[in-house]
Image 1 (cartoon, rainbow, N blue to C red):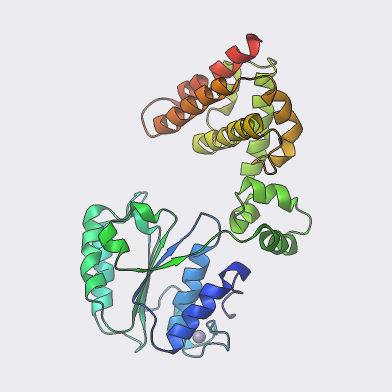
Image 2: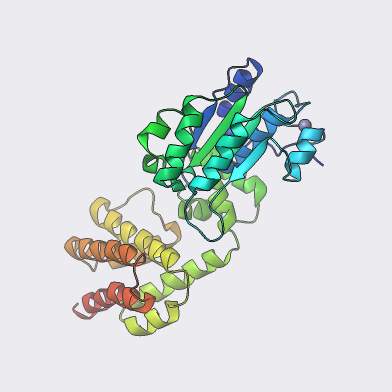
Length: 330
Ligand SMILES: [Zn+2]
């Protein structure tokens, strides 16, 4: 058993403030932890949950990792702690799950300390579930902590949002993110990983050496040969079929946005694909801005179609064919 992991450098201010309030007995009963994907919202929620339950916290407020409460938490069997997420392939947090939270929060603590529930991702609560949570938010018992973790808090009902205190986590500065990632992965191209992850350090770390990163390379290469007129859209669609369609469209979107940036700004300081600057610059010189906005519209439509019954092959062809037409018309 070990103490809780280190507090991520870009969370330190939020952490210290929370610990001070915990020690002063002034921790809010509901925190809405927000911020982009990949910056460690759930890590901080976990560290906070452990900290409020621990019987012998360290000087910096982190859980000791050794006491009875910590042992039970680590084993997933702390009677006063709950982690609630979508279950059994469902995409939503169901009302039954929220009822279980409310009931646990309204009964006495089993170990005599705080009762803690983490809802993640909180925006997946359906309307009935959100309603079910309102009573607990409006009449919270003593010593409860609800941690609602969400990258898309705008999807939560205003009635829920307004009853939580917001803890808005942000992407760290480029220097801080690079320093952290370099220490963790000395061999990695940290600049590229962070660019591909929109500056989110944990997302960048997860990309390193991943199949997703390898797949992105294939998408970039195929797309460039399509624009050069060296590949057929149907053949590419066939090859891409069966891969993660949302991820594929995401990589295409980043390439397209870079082309638009290059077209509008000439030498934009930052690209989403910094390793492709030369290739993208060359392509940007060959295409009209109006065409790019046409591609953007089709790509947005393709993203919408991923939620329908339309086949991946059809969606991909619809996106790829106009690029080929544009190339052959030059
Ligand atoms: Zn402990």
